[in-house]
Amino acid sequence: MKKKIIFFTLIILIFIGYFYINKSIGNKDNFLQKFKYYIPQATKDFLKENIFFYKYKENLKYKVRNMDILLAEQKKKQAVKEMQLENLLILHGSIPIKKIDKIQKFQIENTNYSLKQIFYI
Image (cartoon, rainbow, N blue to C red; front, side, top):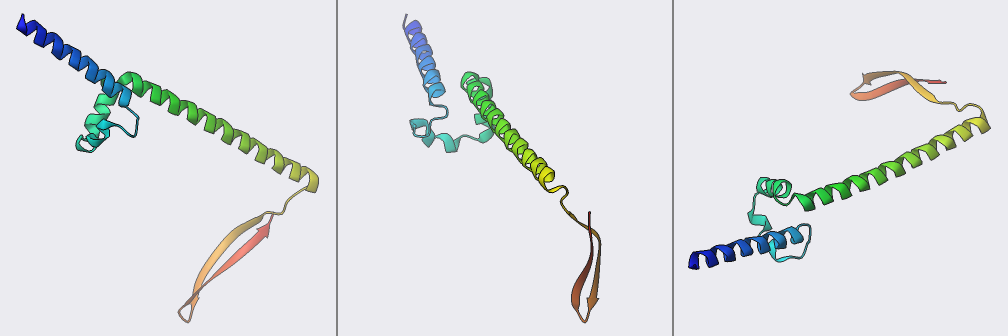
């Protein structure tokens, strides 16, 4: 009878510990943060990915969602820049662009010089 009580008490403590640790993942000010520095990073990653996977999966989904939003914003900015460039080309016809064809480097009296040949397209 005593063994059953000890066994059930141990199982209850394990469940309580599991849920407490699972709830504290990702929180900055927590009792467990003091012990965080004593556990190797490989062990932390293993525990996150295999035992506390539900919270880890939520964090990954959140990161992917944020990356998708950032990517969409960057695509919008790129599209606006392209439209501005197209409008500039329409208004002004063509834009002269410098093209450096040849760069020749030489030295005179211990001073380095470079000669650039520039063409406008």
